[in-house]
Image: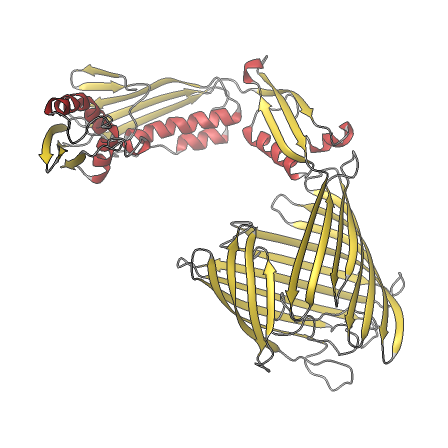
Length: 593
């Protein structure tokens, strides 16, 4: 709607000024009509706006009589002026002619736009309880026009909408424009704008009611961030919903504010959380030439009790590495970002020379910072039973105290185009506290992803690790590092780099690097080529028996990537550069970061 008062050479535009045509239905004039519309004398933006404001032509066809076309031309005149004024052309002129073009009608519109009206001044006044808030001041500072800009009125409307949205988001529900005016001098081709926005009072949250049947009242309070008397903020409501949805307890969270029931500027809030399935089951199957067939099953218990504790059970079978274990998680005071967990796991590593049974128990405290860094402190105990068929067996133990940090930053969680990930860990053990050695170990893993405008993608990753062991040249337990395999150096068997062929204790140092390039072939399929290199070693040079020297291993290969509905699927083929006939195959599913 447009309110216009003609006062001599002035016109005052009030509450609603007609918006620019691209905000309307751009193809409205056609509406499946066979009659073509041509516009001459106007630039592209003005022509598009004129088309958008034309009345519907759906009732006009090639066989329509001439008087019907004449009536349409007459009815469209006001719409053409309205469209031109919305683009700043207040003295535009139009000559519209319907003509026969072959077997059908055509509508020719000749435009004489004249000079556009330009903004000469803009006064914006902000008053009320919210006038000093940063959100309002920032919105007001981003004025829709600079002096001399053409008066495209959609910018004016967008500016008012932005102020109204800020008010609604912050709880100023009585906000209103007490003055809104565009004074246009048609002869001088100038416009003067004046707006006065009164925010009114800010509303608060009233009673907060939560309906759910998973947690008891005491532990539910840890998930509720909305407090009666708190100033209204839509971002806080959104955060509250995300906290409950992210807990895993609820399949759906409905959060409602009843503005009509507000009393004394307090709005009641109701939250209804519908419980999730208590148990989730999943299974996977995979194969790689270095690990063989692997079948894995998982059970996730979203809540064990009314305190919100969780239990994850995992078991896998493969010929070389069967395993089973569970993780019990206890949410703490800020449960969305702070929790404790207890992990118990058993696994067996087998090769032709023997086997290693590892029993592991770990207690971990984890918190996630506001900028998404995951930080953990842990106590990790491992007990080993091993047997080398030629030399017999034995047992040993390690007890580590350590810390971990990690973060993943990506523009998309499933199909990222750009991003990075970083993980770091440091841990130490003492032979005086349930450990057979005194040791200190650190490791850093990183990955970086960058996409080109052409659609190609580079992925680089690297790992560095080092170990110090007191008074021991070769530890009797698997404390060190190994390399090789799908997420390490492709082209080599899993954890074969640094292995001694009998029992893989690992080596004191680790260096791994990889560069990969993916090139799109179709929308869903990409081809990949990569080079991996790495080494697990005890020293850069060695003349000592049992000390593994630095020996860089390089693998090269190619692969195919497929964007499936559940995430990227990768198929890779790789060979070591020291034996191009030793082909390895890899298959994996999951995001790049």
